[in-house]
Every structure is written in structure tokens, then in C-alpha cells.
Image (cartoon, rainbow, N blue to C red):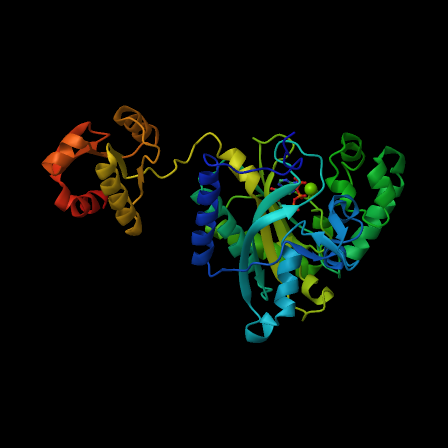
Length: 417
Ligand code: ATP
Ligand code: MG
């Protein structure tokens, strides 16, 4: 019996991987323009890191983490998201000592034990960015503008940017109390998860997808109406900047996000094209996070995009794999070794070239050249060899010409450029 992969964890095969490479390369290019540098952290961290940052009473920590004991009995967890690891690294390497302002991005696999379905997997990939050390609302706007620039650059449209503010330690506790009282009067209508967690994480009910919970909380008090003056001013300025820059958004006072560390500005980018898995990107401010992980009291804001969801949105357009410039079709030992030598020489120059290594007939070799969509086929048969030439056929224009073998490498190099 053959061994299969793990449920909810996907292979990315040629044909699809070109889209992934395009999404990744565009991220590197766009983020660099805004001064973001890449950071790479391990795929596994101490379990404690995620419990402390994401929060104990969240879906991720309660139900979704891949947590193991290693051979020394340490509890380790496959990262369910990127921000906690980036902050851990930022603190551990005292990056703030060099520069308290850091703009970082990452890309890589994340792991959550969820029910696999379209747009929701157990290993999935995020491309994310974090701007650390700046309070000013202009950085919130900048992060959102960069995100929308990226989504434009990769050609994904019909998206909606939804904004909310979750307040700060000044104004949220009073709101939380108010919400708690509101929920207590409606406990019977809430789902089991919301009931069990209402005291530890009351805000979560606002984000619950269960219809009963949505109905019961339809007229719940909103954080947005209860922001303290500094959160209110911050949020107004973020919106002002976005308006100045012509970046459209809508307010969604019910958006709370599934992670505890968020403060002030939070956002999601949603699409109508992916069914229930409608968020392609999400993020927000996390002003208390770095300090709570043992670092200096520096603010931060960031986002993460789900790459599988971006790929789904791009699935109508196939991004073509690069075509070989040349296919060498050769017949006879001498011609074959000539063709092989030329192919290797061109590859060394960065020119994509292929040949047949199975001793197939000339006809079969031509078919393969067509299948690989080579731009030119270089035919060296016995007759050509005897005359000291190769036949170079332009596969698109269906024209051909003879080139002396002695000039072939030079001519083909010129043709490829
Ligand atoms: P959702 O509401 O879809 O569960 P989330 O709020 O749990 O998303 P975040 O933790 O904010 O998601 O992660 C940011 C982005 O990562 C999401 O907007 C989504 O695009 C993607 N994402 C999250 N979980 C998964 C998953 N299991 N499979 C694929 N993509 C995911
Ligand atoms: Mg989730």
C-alpha cells in the first residue's frame, strides 16, 4: 500500500507552483518598496509563546494547535501564526537596541488543527508584515496601503477592507464589562463555545459564525462607540489618512479578531468569492504584545494574508511556466554528444535548454519539443552532421534556417536574448 500525505496538508505541484512563486515574488518586491526586510523564524516554538501572546481562551490555543512533547519532554508547538514568533525574535536578538523602529515581513507555512475544507487547511501559508515601534496613525494607514498595493499588484480585486478599533487598556475593560452584562442576559441563546468562554473572552461572541449567536448579539454594544478620547482620535486619523490616499474601506464594529493581543486598529480584507472562508488577509495593532513577551514597551501593527486563499482567487488565470528557449533533437551518437555539450554550455549561460536522453526517434523528439513548448528546436541529424550544420526551427513562426555548427553556440546565445 502506498503512503499518502497528511489530511489538510497539501502538495503544491508544478502548474500551480508558478502562481505561488508569483505571489511570493510580488510580496518581496512590493514590501521592499515600503522598506520592509524579510525575517525567517523556525516553524516550531515553545508552546508557552503562543499561549501567552494569542491568549488561552481563543480558538487557536484551545483547539487548533499542533502541540507535542519532544524527546526531552519539552512542550513545543508548530506555529499557528507568524506575529508571535517575529516578536519573540525581535526581543531575543534585542533588535530594538539597534533601531526601535523595525519593518519586517515573513512568508511560510503555519499549522492549525482545523476541519479541512475549501480555503481552510491544517498546513497553510501566510505572507505577513509587521511594523514595530511607531504609534503614529500614519503607520496604520501605511500598512493598509501596502496591503492594498500588494493585492492590486497581484491582480486580486472585488475585495473589501473592513476596519474596526478594539480600544486599549484604558477603554476596553469598561466595554468588556458592559458586553459581559449584555451577554449574561442572553446566555441561553449562545452556542456552547460562547457560553463556556463568555467570561474569559466575551468579545469573541461578536465574531461567532453560529447564526443563533449572531442574532443574540445583533444589538450588542459596540467598542467603536466607547473608545477613549485617545483611541478615538487615533482611529479618526487612520481613517482620515486612508481617505486622503483614496483607499476605500468600510467600518465593521463587530470585527473582533481571534487573537487576544490586538488593540486599537484592526482590519480584515474579505471577498465574496470564497464562501465561508471569506477573509484573505487580517491584522491590526498590538501595542501591548512586545512588553507582555518580556520586551520593551513598543507598539506594533501588522497583517497576515492566507496564500491558499489568494491562490484560489487567482485559479482562473494560469501563470505560465517559463518555456525552454531550445530543444536539441539529435540522431546518432556523435550528434547526440554535440547536442548534449551545447545544451550544457547554454544552461551555464542561464539559457533554458532541453534535449532527449532516451535515444528516441527524431519524430518522438520533435513531439517532445512541442510538448515542452520550446521556442526553437535545434535539429542535428546524420545529414546535418555530415554537412557541418544544424537546422534551427522557430516553433512559433514555423520557419527554419541552417546554421554552421562552428557558430551554433554563439548564434543560439544571440537568439535567446
Ligand atoms: P478565519 O476567520 O478564516 O478562521 P482567522 O481569523 O483564523 O481566519 P488569522 O489568524 O487572522 O485568520 O490569519 C490570517 C489569514 O490567514 C486569514 O485571513 C486567512 O486568509 C488565513 N488562514 C487562517 N487560517 C487558515 C487555514 N486554516 N487555512 C488557510 N488559510 C488560513
Ligand atoms: Mg480561524
